[in-house]
Length: 193
Ligand SMILES: [Zn+2]
Image (cartoon, rainbow, N blue to C red; front, side, top):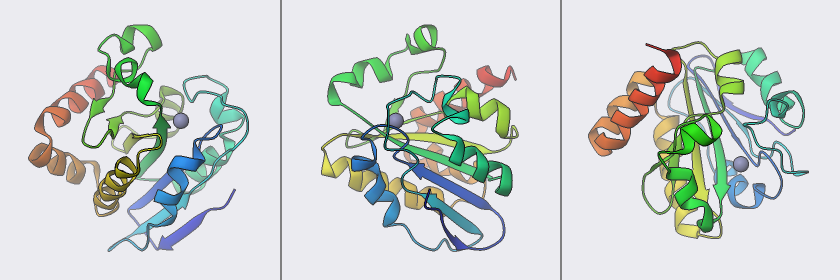
């Protein structure tokens, strides 16, 4: 899988897109337009896998079609990790539902702007491969919505400019306080803090 690395040293940020099926069509160009961070490194994998659709919530994903992600994570130990996914408008309610935690074991997404959703990454990679202090995020772009992709690009630029989890929390508290509070609560529940 193509991996582009900009800059050098820490913090090390790793952004991935096109994780399964046809998702790359909506996510990869957003990642390919990113460039050099002000400090540290940014690694970008615009397409992880274009084959079969296997959910990242399935235990086999990161050992199978998503293994290229784990290889990079093990090699570089990212401080910040972002997955860029896409969803069909019809699934919006399911994705942001409070019930999601009971149904699929992960908290519902928060809605930002222009159909872009934010949430945590699959426990299969979060727990196994990242320390507690790492920042791990998923952004979901609404399929076939150019404005959603544009907004995701802006948010990724913000994450690219962050040096730590605290930097990002500070940004979120200022711009999306409700989303920030929910993210912190979900995170504490996840780690039993
Ligand atoms: Zn996806």
